[in-house]
Structure formats: structure tokens, C-alpha cells
Length: 386
Ligand code: NAD
Ligand code: MG
Image (tube, rainbow, N blue to C red):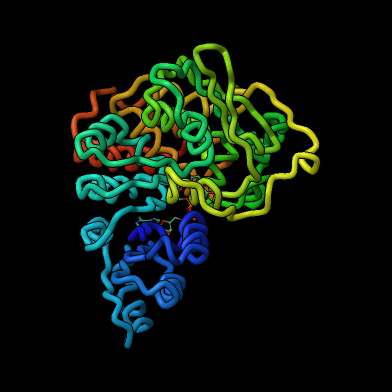
């Protein structure tokens, strides 16, 4: 029996994780659930899964959540500090890190320091703090299991491969809803259009990141840290059907891929079952139904976010943290209709250009840079983009 803390339980990954738990009650037990703001949903989840502790990040929701769980023996806490401290509950074996954005970094660091297994969906943790997070993980000797479908695919391809046999990682990208749009068409893109992903059903922020291809850029940085691969040896290929989740090329030229329906339940379950494999959480892949798989080069000029993310990853230091913070501000502004779709990369570019790079020295330094980058990006929004 694995005792779980699910951070970001009320989100898309959180909900799919609970479905895996529901189907495997003899293997998984929920001890901690955390949510951001949606207290009714968190209360409903808590009443079903009966954790020892629930935490809501939004302190204003504490009273409502507490009232909804009155009469149960579930402990209720609120606030960002309580989310970070939630991983200290006993007994815990693993954490599913499914908070969105840089807000997920500190809870993951706390879980690593506690020696818990990390099932990582929150890619921003590795984008912002990659070198420091990986150092802490090595020091603590904990297992870091990728939930992101591409990284789960690579991880699965690498099982039982000899040391130093990996020569290249090939990350697939759906290309998002605007893959075939011209620059002119992109000028008129609305949040509603961008929130409709052709293959995946996900939270709002990552859906916009998938439309700008920032998501793929963040995934390149994530892969660099997870698999210790140079940026020169990470390739991106657009594969609109999202059936091949990624590939690995080995030193003898052989390429191995992992396939499946575009559904996060399988990668989530594998992170929880590893090194075992459990009963399938979805219907079997049917290649005749897939019929064809196609591949094309990504267009970095129409999707500048991808180029900026790779640039920031290669630069290292604080740059990926700046990129990520600017992106979070830009995506939120786009969703609020304060800026247009193609102004997302423009705001990120300007914010990156306003920072002088420096080495990533500590998590507290990065948290400060994160705040500064958000302030700069927000100020540029207020003062106009030009
Ligand atoms: P989501 O928006 O659906 O859910 C995010 C969760 O985090 C919610 O529970 C929300 O309440 C919580 N949250 C948000 N801000 C918070 C804060 N400041 N403090 C504490 N909790 C907070 O997002 P999602 O789509 O489930 O994605 C979660 C993470 O997983 C992201 O990093 C995303 O990139 C990654 N991911 C998601 C998918 C997917 O299919 N959804 C696939 C791969 C990776
Ligand atoms: Mg992914």
C-alpha cells in the first residue's frame, strides 16, 4: 500500500490521479489532498477519499471548507505555508506534484527533503529550479518519476538500457490548435480558440502553453534535467495525432518509442506503479483506428515561445525562471483579454531582455527572481507593450 499526498488535487492531473486511486484501492491510499481555491470540489474529494489532511491554498476558503467537512475526522488547513508543510504528514510514501506553475516548486522541495518519492507533473519545478532540484534529489536519494506523457515515454523507453547508451531524445509535439495557422490568422486568435486543444483535455494554463508551443519548450528543459541530456541531443518533432508520446535514439542508431492514446491516466498510473505495471486504465490502443501517423518540423518563427524557452534553457542560471514567470503573467493576461495571442512571446522576450543572467544559487534567490520577473512583466503590460 502506497500512502499518497496529491498536491493540486482539484486540477486536471489531480482528478485523473484520483481516478487511478479509485481503481486501485488495494494499492493506493490518499493521506493528503491540497487545492488552490476550489473548496467545494476539494471537500467532495475529501469526503470520498477520506484523507487525514486537506489543505486549501486560499485562506479565504478555509471557513467554507472546514464547514463542509464538519463531522468528519479530516484535519483542515489553509495557506501557502500549509500546502508546503502538508508533505510532513505521517505516513507518506509518495507525492503527486500536480500544482500548476512555479507555485509547485517549494512543495516539491519540501517533499524531496522529506525523502518522499516524487511523481512529477509540475514541469515548472524543473524549469525554474532544475539544477538545485536535481541536486537535492540526488542528495536525498529519492525516486523522481515523470508524469508528463513525453517524459514518461522517454523514461519507459530507457528502462533496462545500459548506461551511456542514450544518444538522443526525440520529443513529440501535437503542434496545438494553430499548427497550420498563418501569422495573420494568429493575430485574431481568441482565448476560446486557444483553450480547445485538438487531442488533450488539460488545465487552462498548460492548454495555452500547448497552443503557443511554450509547453514543448518547457518540456525540453524538463527533459534536460530529468535525463541529464545536452540540449544539442534533444530534438522536437511535430506529430499531430499524439499517439507516439516520445522516442529515444540509442548509441547503435536504434530508436525506441512509447505509444498510447492521448490520455494522462496511463503516464500517471505508471509513475505510481513503477517499476510494476498494473491493469490498463484505458481501452487498448487500436492502430487500425489510428490509421496514420505523420511527422513534421516545428516552426520556431511562428511559435517564438519554443525558441525562447530553448534559448533560456541553454543559457541556464536564472533565465528559465525569468522565462517561466513572464510566461505565467502573459498567459494570465491573454486569458483576461489584456493582450493578444502573439503578444505572449513578445512580453516574454521583453522580460528576458530586462534581466542580466546570473547563476542559480538557491531556491530563495529563484523565488525572488520569480517575483521580480512577474513585477517587470506586469509593469510592461500596464505601461503598454511598445
Ligand atoms: P490545473 O490548472 O487543472 O490544476 C492545477 C492545480 O493546482 C489545481 O488543483 C489548483 O487548485 C492548484 N493550484 C493552482 N495554483 C496554486 C497555488 N498557487 N498554490 C497551490 N495550489 C495551486 O492544471 P493541470 O492541467 O492539472 O496541470 C498541473 C501540472 O501538471 C502543470 O504543471 C502542468 O504543466 C502539468 N501537466 C499537466 C498535464 C495535463 O494533461 N493536464 C499533462 C502534463 C503535465
Ligand atoms: Mg507533455
